[in-house]
Image (tube, rainbow, N blue to C red; front, side, top):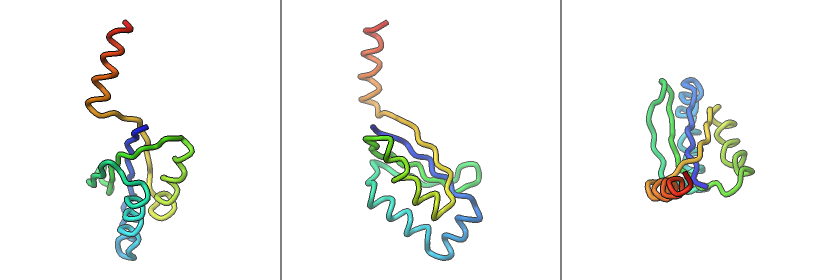
Length: 99
């Protein structure tokens, strides 16, 4: 299932990770390992934040994805199922038939 991850890094932990080189290494490993459909980087509520869209076929993958980010960056992570426009159209069509 497609999941959107919101990964927010506390400022102090992010500063340390930039200075010591951890941040690009951890993000690079995440990208290589999970091959997100898309990954976007911004600030959100004053924190460095990544929004990444990954396939998570099983909930047991949550620790596989999250623990390296928790441990290395002190990240706060939210995981939300999401869909693209085609999937939305398909779901709405089914919902309309079932009402």
